[in-house]
Length: 116
Image (cartoon, rainbow, N blue to C red; front, side, top):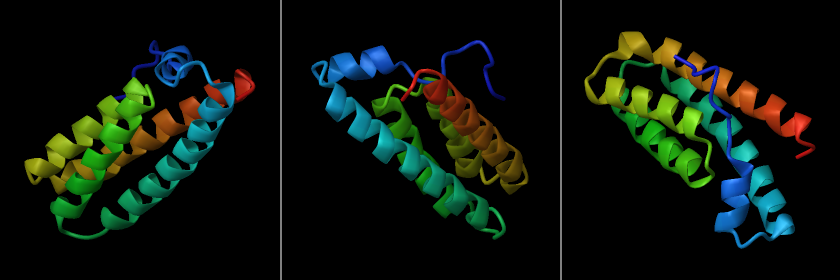
């Protein structure tokens, strides 16, 4: 489930981690946004199969990517998907991937509102 009270990404923490370099932050955000969009599309495709392992592996990578970018709500959603797939619960895959997409949409709206 998506936490509607959490900020989708802590841009200030990301900027601090990157030494306050705005051009680097902008480049990281552009790359991050493209990667998470592609990863969620891949997860959606994988969810039509019967094998939870590739979903688990991609969710694990997405969890780390989101954590590194300071997008904790999305990282937590990826963690939930990873745990469900580690348990072999394919019935949860589509809803959890929908939760990730909702997080991505919130992140896009937030960054757009911030001018990023």
